Image 1: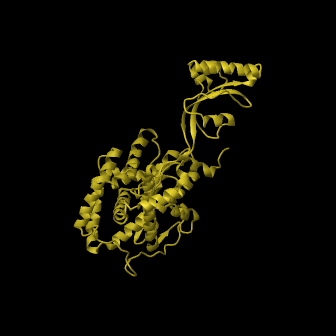
Image 2: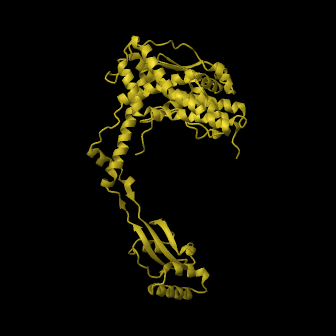
Image 3: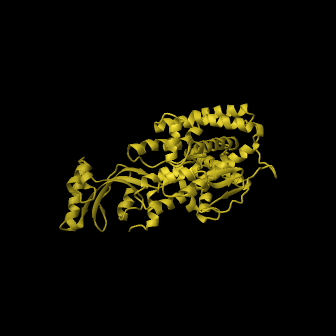
Length: 440
């Protein structure tokens, strides 16, 4: 069935990864579409490099270097990050009213060279511009130009902008509150340090990835995608400080007492159940392929005698068996208890000693001889063998809970306005940013 036009583009972009919050990689930029020719390949290197920035932020040497700089400015980890109280937050007015998305987003990426300074959100005392996010989106959609109608690209661009903004708001909220604690006389120095860090790391990598010679040529490349170096620097500093705050406030190694491990194991015992299964050999003579039932029995008895004399089971299966696996010597791979249609064979497989032949078995289809090659008995994985797996699971759950509580705290303490306020799809994307608890 052919998908409706307004759905096709979403099939096209399925699998593209937008910004995601998670423990240890608290904010990353998108991964990009596969390369389309040499020029597209060069551009994709930039976007892939930007995606790797989340991993770069985890590099302790880089963070320690930044922390040393912050310490020099009197903004070290020793300071307790606290929420500013009534009247202390210098908020911008949130009376901008709604804007028409169509006025801001056009189908051509080049349009955003002029539109990337439009404000799409205010988060605390910070603004979010079209250009902060649209370059990544344009790059992802570029491969679909000419393949999907312009109106579908525009619709996809709007949905992707909503999703990316929904994630970015949390980063900006943390950044905004961080900046609120910086003494006014230190702000300029902090901005200089962050700008230098961007030039020394991200900007150099972007220049190398795109094969340009300097920042001016890099700016031209970014303008082609509807963004700018200034936009990337804004995002970079927010993500960097977001990471710094998260690392300060989250306990990445929460304690899990032994009793908690045991309680979890008992409560989820069925998750560690081992199902009985068996590997076996089988020789089958089907009634429908032998002229009479007595003759079939005599043939099977002769086969059994050959086995007792030491003849290879596999050779006899290949020569005489009517079974599905006769060509491979009658070997059947792992089969769980109760999975076979023949209850006679099933019972024999889970009662015979491993390595022993069965007697001649009869069911409604024919006569059979089986031999068990290997068997796993039903039971449960021991607590000793599972406790480290459980520990890792509970640690991740505790970190997830911490992260969700921290993000929720910043959301509740930060005033936010966006052009998508009241949009149910956008609100859904916002809810999705909270990391769901793991199953179990």
